[in-house]
Length: 374
Image (cartoon, rainbow, N blue to C red; front, top):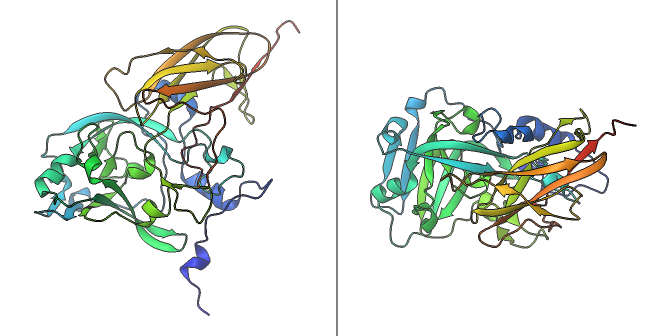
């Protein structure tokens, strides 16, 4: 009997009790990389340090000039645009923090078997491009439009389903101007690197990374809800494999600590000298602006308010926070907790789901302060 796609593309599963990372997860971890947390000191993440998740292969684009973006479906006038055409529209640059929906997945028990993120799947960049709204207005969206579907050039198979990577947005979000959704062609003032979607990608401020379709080649307006794999099967928050679940959408609030002192090579335990230590980090949320950050130096037993910098007009980027701590000899566990203007707060205990999505449990940073008199 002949082999089928389902023979090489298996269903999602949970790791067994005590099961370590397998070769499949290690292969994913080698292909995709996270932000070294010490690089949060940069307001804008250097492109080579920004997190990367690629579902399938990075498409080879030998000649950007031949790339075409189509806008069609339920519109009055279909568009076919080259990258040169897109650069004739008024450009917009927006600083945006992107975070993978699976950030923190490897910390869950039981662990969903997939890209094994700890807490490093995040980065902030200045994206330049054309507001999606302008393209849709030029095409003329039909009055009965429901969703806008975005198709990337990356192609693969997942859980037995062969597919181009596709995601959608509700038409109201796609046409909105606060925030503006971008068809981006530049990152930090330079053409998009291949791993970040060269030559075109979608940037949706406030939404998790799966929404930010890379290698964008098609925009299709439809008059029914989109039911593609990445929308209706993947990226759903559910506890039971048979339930429909809730869609993953906006980024939950999170604060991370820039690891202080210096690390042990293997354990990553931080070492600090006794005395004053300036703790710093970043906080962000996709639902509403971050309003405050609390810091704990005793494993979450007590919390104290941190100083939170203004956003300086970058409403969709992370914000710097700081806290002065007096370290005494011994072992400590640091953490930070973000609160946003919509009343969302990082949980002290994480609700579990099968995909490991939107896991914003408070970070734990082990710190050792040696006793110099011992």
